[in-house]
Amino acid sequence: MQSYRNSDPRPPIMQGSPPAMVLPKLEWDRPPWNRWAFQHIREFLPTAEVWRGSGHRHRFERAEVDLDELPVLDSDGAATTLAALLDETYTDGFLVLKDRKIAYERYFNGMDERTLHLSQSMAKSITGSVFGILVGRGLIDPAKLVTDYLPELGATGWEGASVQHVLDMTTGVRFCEEYTDRYSEIGQVDVATGWKPIPPDSDPHFQWPSHLFELILRLKDKVREHGEAFQYRSIETDVLAFVMERVTGKRLAQLVSEELWQKLGADESACFTVDSAGYAVADGGFNATLRDYGRFGQLILDNGGGVIPGEWIEATRSGKHASTFNPSLPEGSYRNQFWIEDPRSRALMCRGVFGQLIHIDWGNRMVVVKLSSYPDFTNIAYSVATLKAVHAMAAALA
Image 1: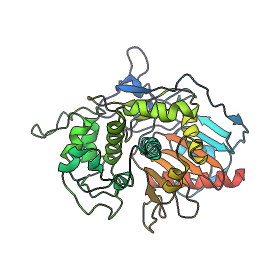
Image 2: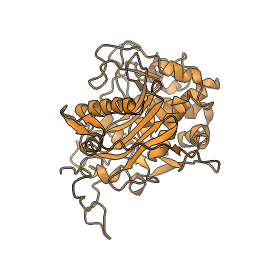
Image 3: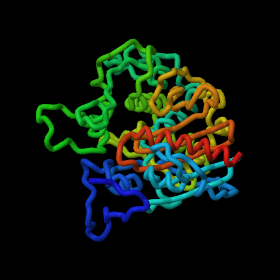
Image 4: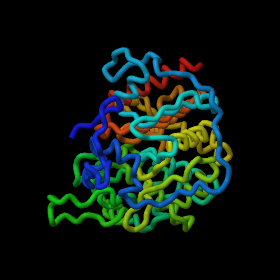
């Protein structure tokens, strides 16, 4: 089925009693279903709360600028407006913080200020930031081998890999991140995490993992030496989360609550999806509101704000850049579970499939959050146009 943009009529997905169009369990993250599903995860997947605590809520001041008609380029490179680009790129929520104040905020597709939206792989940066807190406390040493913390991985492809290799996704572990191949390792992650059922037409002899750690223990092959090259592997974040749980004796959702969310001044409690063993899915299962994602981005922009060690933020901004790193980030890098835009701005980015973005720009004192539900896992043209629009907004707000 085709998706719909915000300017199009909305199909009655999960509307009515009983609903007229019921979410298919095997296709919930595909169009058009993802336009509803990314804002309603708790209604069809098991989740664990990331409690906001009973403390203060950080209230943003507002210094709003109407950027709807800001001239930008669309995904074909033609002149358009920011409002039109947000419609073209299936935006659910969009927030711009300038000098710690809300400069621009828009909601679409039924989303509002209290709606929790799936982060996809922005969850990796959330997890990595709490990991940095534990490193700063001396509980984890990135220079040590990952098997020093998880000895079970001695029989896997992670044997000999340092924790820093895992943080930077430079291990040599064989892992295919081909989203449309249900038998790929990332396809098996969908089943292991409980995101998807076993495909009904799958090979009856194929052994599907029943939970995520079981899948991790099956990954026994290496394709290169550890530290040789970056390769994006979602499973690395889950390995980090198991390290965190092992050294603290606490579940990931509790750690993120106590170490980050309660100190953030969040508006709402967040949540993680959990697998059949109760493990919170660190690589993509986090859900939060638009403004709370903005609060997280602002905390990073504030060099950790006394919550995350400032030296961890600085180290995170210091990746090794290559001339052909990523199609949408040609001068980019990856460090400590964050993307780095280029070696000049050293702006950090949290990114997730289907168009999730937190852009953190020290030079312009600006944080931009975009929550989306693209029809495709990735769309380079949308990502490039969005990044160019971020730069146009920075110039307009300078």
